[in-house]
Length: 317
Image 1 (tube, rainbow, N blue to C red):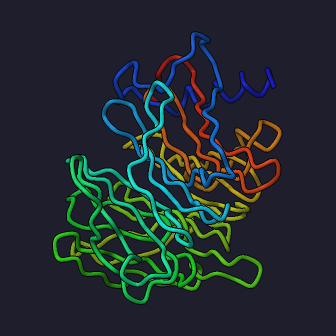
Image 2 (cartoon, rainbow, N blue to C red):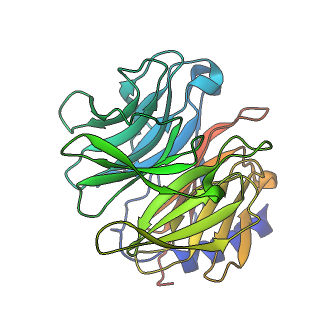
């Protein structure tokens, strides 16, 4: 474990950049290189699926719920380790992707058997949850991304195998991108999974195909050319990037229980695995000098938690 930690710290030190303020890490350790984690109760429906950060360093975490036969929830994990529930769903529902806008509004996907509840919701900083759009025709809303203009959202539909776009102001939705590589297969019922707007393009992970994709966006806002950045990533889920100006991706691979770094050109490096305690990792984020990983704990012994891998320093990649 010590060797793994040193190698991982060296990799993370190259990935993280100086864009975030010092001291923004959750419960920082005195150790210069450290791996720490916040454990959750899987049986209570605390199954971390996605995360977004607030300016104070706290996290907004989507809890699946249904995989443990419990209601889903959106919670805030404070730097102290305390947890506050922001939204609680109903039995049979599943809460997946969430993203925070600059104005403090949190958008999140709610999959529900009740038509009047299913769709994309928003939680204002000091208000009650409000549904933004129903997304008619959707099958399973998963990854969620916000356009930099703050007016539209992109949603990966894992079962329908499409990318939806939602106009936040109008509350309307439409299919934005569809391709066979986004569709589920007989061996994997999840196709399109994670989605990110990054450097003028939409990046998408396809779990069924084990692929990371990049779709260019035209001036009219429509999908342009699609490129396969990497393939063969078993269980690829959500992902993040090493920095605003870097195309180096950090990917959570759920079924293979790995975190991989994917460089431009498709070269892959595994930096964390099941041997390091991973149990169905679902999403990754970088903040300050740390890499954060959510894991839902779907496999025995159902170790659901958020990992923090810190180098104690920052460096331009």
